[in-house]
Structures are given as structure tokens and as C-alpha cells.
Length: 291
Image (cartoon, rainbow, N blue to C red; front, side, top):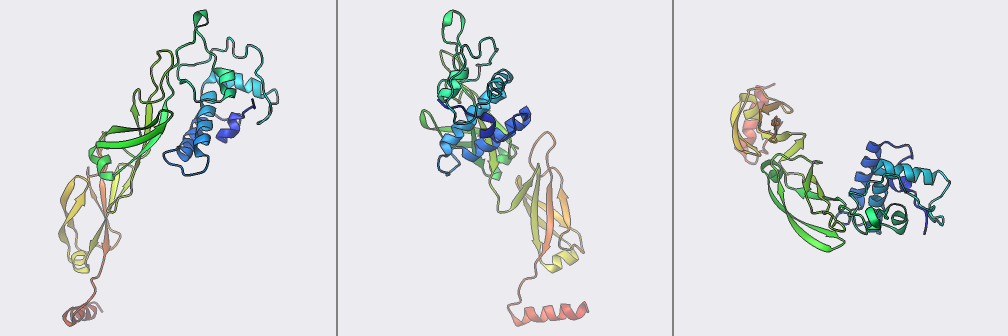
């Protein structure tokens, strides 16, 4: 059995804070997740990242591991745990699932037993995954079907998407993570939401941005135009003398929430090409009029 440097696996320093460790874990879990990564060996790296995080996120297990690491062990060296390692350390085994960890991890932390030497029930591990949804679904809510690969094979779930969810937010599905052991409950599935790029709208926080293309005469003279929003079309009054880059706000027309976002409409002036003699003549007259 070989010693593992969990700090090295997560790419953090031994003195890293809990926030830094969690951030590194989430970044690597997204990178190597089997549902996302096409990199060779991604599944094994994903398991290694999960194992490293399980060892370092719990203060008691991390302290014990740090004491062991301080003895000078190096990654890949032959390792045998000291006798009675972990006794009285107060390890938290409530979030460990059954199986899925290396012999090294199990030799250090996997021997939790209750009174009388009976195996201690362990809650299943939480599982992280990613779901990508259209912007329209993020706005109005709905249901999305996702496929997951885990130790039990591939499974399909129907996920309820709450209205107004933003990229990076998580949806927790209770009991959909790894199975628990000895009667303990299963862990949860934590779905990180990604929103697909939209051909018309750009999302920035809860605000939505839209580019409105206008012909020169509407921009110069002013007009009332129909503008699409995620909640449907609305009428927008464009003031006379508007130039490219002018921005107008539709209050409350962004993503829903406790404080709804706004929609910002940016003017872009586009001159239609002159295909006929009459059209060219009009452009010439306009050019002379503005000399």
C-alpha cells in the first residue's frame, strides 16, 4: 500500500484554509467528472479528488492525517498505518459511503465501529454533478432529464428547476447520492447549474442584456418598437437622437428573484443596403442634407 499526499492531489498547500480546500475540490471535481471530462483517466482522478476532499474537509481526520504526513512520508512510498491509528480521534464518519475509497484511505479512516465492535452505520457520500439548461428554463423554471454514471451504472433523473436560478447555483436532491451502509441513509446529489448561451440574450447576474438593431431613421427620429424579453414582448419607446451604444432599462424584466433583475437594451444602428436606384437616391439626398 502506498502513501497518498492529499494536499498534492487537490493542488493546495498544507496550510490551506477550509475555503481554499473546498474551492480546489469543486474546481477539480468539475474538471474530471465522468459526465463532463473526455480526458484519459478522468474517472480515476475524479475518485482521487473525492477521496482527498473526504480526508481534508473534516477537521479531526485532517489533524490525524497531518500528524502522519509530518513523519516524512512521501507520495508513492510503501506505507503501513501505525497500530491503533485514529483511536480516540473523534472522526466524523457520518458522510462516508460504503466503498469507493482506496486501501490507503480505508486503512486510516474506514474502520469506524460502534459499541460492541459492530460496524457503524455510515451515511452515503454526497455526489456532485452538473446540469446545463436553456436560459428560458432558468427564467421560468421547469423540468430537465439528466443522465448520471456512478458505481451502480447509469441512471436517469428528472430534475425540477426553480424559476430564476442562476449559473453556479446548486440544486440538492436528497437521497440521490451514494448509498449508505448498515441502514444509514443515502447521501445527496448536488447539481451545479450551468446556463447555455442564448442567441438573443446575455445574462449578467440577474440582469439580462439585449441588443436592439435600428435603422438610422428610427434612431434619429425616435420610434416605439417591440422588444423581446424572457417574459414576452414589450413596447419600448426609443427617444429621438439615439446613437449606437445608447442603453435603456426595462425595470424588473430580468431574472425573477426576491429582487428581480432588469433588462438592458443597447441600441445598434444598422444602415440597410441600397439595392435600387430609388434607395441609392434617398441615401444621396440624406448625405447632402447633412453636409
